[in-house]
Amino acid sequence: MTAAPGEHRYEVKSQTERYDGRVFSVVTDEVVMPGGRVAPRDYVRHVGAVGVVALDDDGRVVLIRQYRHPIGRMLWELPAGLVDVVGEALPAAALRELAEEVDLTAGQVDLLVDLHTSPGASTELIRVFLARQLADVPVAQRHERRDEEAELQVVRVDLDQAVAMVLAGEITNAACVGGVLAAARARDLGWAPLRPADAPLPG
Image (cartoon, rainbow, N blue to C red; front, side, top):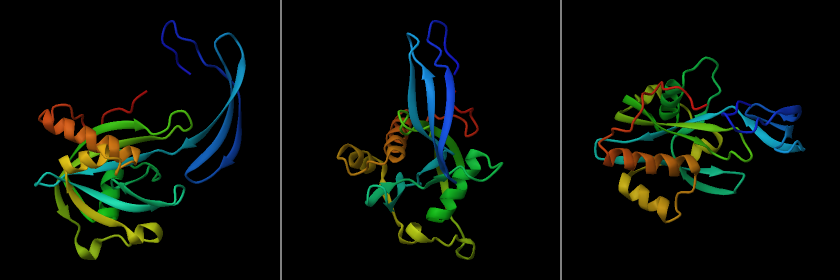
């Protein structure tokens, strides 16, 4: 692991893969700690994801409500999905998820925020984009949603109302929390903080 000058270099002495799946694997690293002790660190190695704050001309954000089995309930979320198509650029992946989950396209896409969702336990990085100039996907071209996605609820909520939902604890999905708050702040600053959609990934 790269360390800045003066920082300890956390050398990995060995790595054992415990599970290997389509979306993630589980590994144990033996890591050299400051002082020389070697300690095991278990974590999930994740393929990564993209999310989209889709904002319409009336200042409303498109939210979905979807069942998440690990916590056993429905959550308010952004249109989002895995980075699991070989060779697909991240902005293209975001537009694909926007079309598949909420039947929308976007004429303008900017980078909003990058989030490590659980850095103490997972490598997952989700890149959240801001999509504007929205239009409907033609009915004949719409994606057939299955399993949990078959019951997606899609709503449009004023961005300030979505911020209130975050602060009230009604929105707890990390990407949705980060995306909504970042979009509101960027809007209040006249969109000046936005980065190009193809900006380099952190690190």
